[in-house]
Length: 216
Image (cartoon, rainbow, N blue to C red; front, side):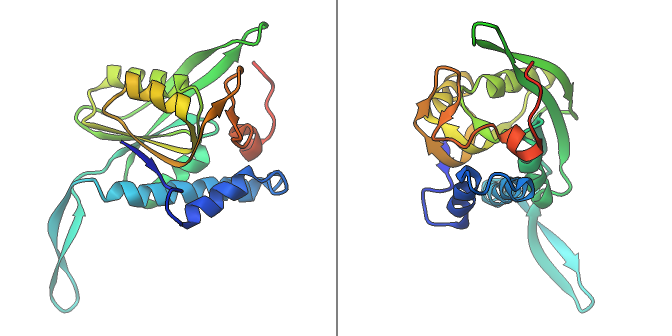
């Protein structure tokens, strides 16, 4: 299932528009906060499809029965660009377990790149709900490699992917390699450049959030 959070009128579309806007991108705090807001909105929407149970809550005057999450999900993110989006998810799933993955594009002299996965820290994943966040779902290569690695650590029951902007090319690749995953995105673009960048996209989310890096 693919959910485009900008398909209907909502503040998500407004926040994605600000992320794209070159006149606003120099404000790193605003850029990070908008990614965080998209994570929060995605968390709220994802919560609607997670299992709940009824729980009796003792108040000062009596007992109230409320539906509460049956279990906490595992929030996984791809460093470094995914941190603000992850933080938005964590603001809502504030008792969740967390996983961190270092997956990045290792560029070759001919302009091609490979996905290098150097570091993973994760909790027990067997039969868990995993929510993986990465602001840009471009080719889908880093997300698929991350999902495959996480599956080697345990067999999750559900996988949800959260992206600020996704490309239809990457979505199709993820659907082929992880067909049971649900993708939640702030918006969907159709074009991908030869170097694997989304058009119109927004540029390099990691650089815009945290500053320009030395190319590896």
